[in-house]
Image 1: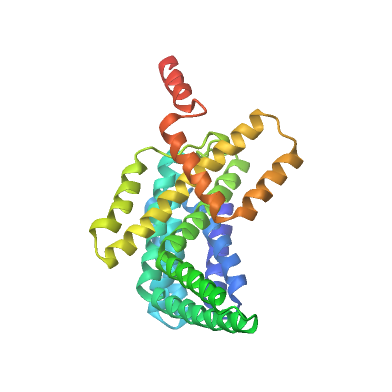
Image 2: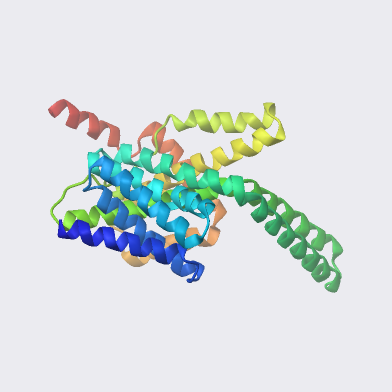
Amino acid sequence: MKLVGMLLALTFGLTVLATGGWLPAGAVFALNLALSVSLIFLFGRLPLGASLGWTFILTAASGWMGKSWMAAVVYLALTLLPAAAVGLAVAKKISYGRTLLVLAASALAPTALFVGFAYSSVQLQLLAFGETMKQTLAGLGAGLGSSARGEQFQKAVQSYLEFIVGVIPALYFISSFFFLALSHLLAVWALGRLGIFSPGPKKFITWQAPFFLVFLLGAGLASHLFLEAGWVAAADNLLVVVIFIYAVGGASNVEYFLKKLRAHWAVKGLFYVWMVLFGLASFFILSAVGFLDSRFDFRGLKKVALTKESEE
């Protein structure tokens, strides 16, 4: 009970600090992470009614500090509701696979808020940055006496920026998901230190992307043939999320086989540095590996799971 009281006071204090407008953005991010971890930990121990009641109190406190109920609604959607949903999953002790679905659903609220209120502003800023870059490259090409090369750079920058601007919602969703996933892992670790079990993730080398995502992949690719521009942009965001999931599965495969080969840490380090240097190409290679593994099960994970089920 004493711990619960301390967490109630801590989460209230963190809410006041995060919404008071006194701190820089970096500090607010750290405070929100600490608040999310504390709330997931707290809601993992409280009854549902008490968790919802405390969420309402923190929402009111954020509105009072921000002198705006709109600020309270934003804070509720960005921080409090996602943490409450994940905390409920912890309290119910559902499997980590289902918790991932809760994390994904919880990340939709801040993403929807971002798309509705901030996306257009970020779009304009990036497009303005792109125009500046194009002018710089044009001047550089003229200075080097190679206008053709300057035009090629301009087109490449324009295409890259248009792609990035189009998939910003997907990137925001992925970052929100990982923020919540990190908060969940820290909260589960803290609960474990107190002897309270809550399902956590399996070892990374056993992660595998589900094969059914191939249908979403196919739908996203087909949209470029049959849908209009607005729907194509939405499909591209879906594609980025699906490809990212397959890339995580591919990275799990790489780590598994490096461990199986007993690769020296220096060799592993050089391999990962090489992958980082190749950037986008490495990402697509990992995605391809993850996709193929979801179908052909390179590590035999599905056979192991079936064997365990039959033994039980």
